[in-house]
Amino acid sequence: MANHLLDNKMPAKTGWMDWDQFLQRWGFKESAAALIDASGPMNIFLAQIIHVANPFLRLIWAGGQWETLAEMLEDQQQSKDFVAYLRSKENA
Image (tube, rainbow, N blue to C red; front, side, top):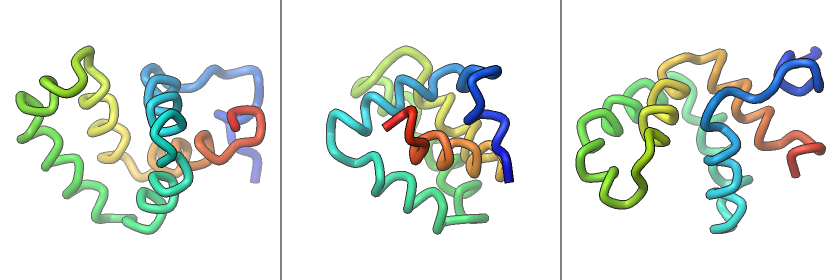
């Protein structure tokens, strides 16, 4: 199954590179990919928690990255694409 985000014709979604760098820096890249992948429908619940906690999360990391994460988690296809993006060889 070819993933449209993995070919070089289409760049990654806005904010995904920020999350990739953040997760890579802290050593959570594969753990995050596994968690998002395994959570399935629970990702919508996680997104709602992020929306509610957003004012507090912005104290940790401002710039819209939390909204990007929440939006990605709300959409099952985007979640799958993001996991594939995190696990892609050219992104490793």
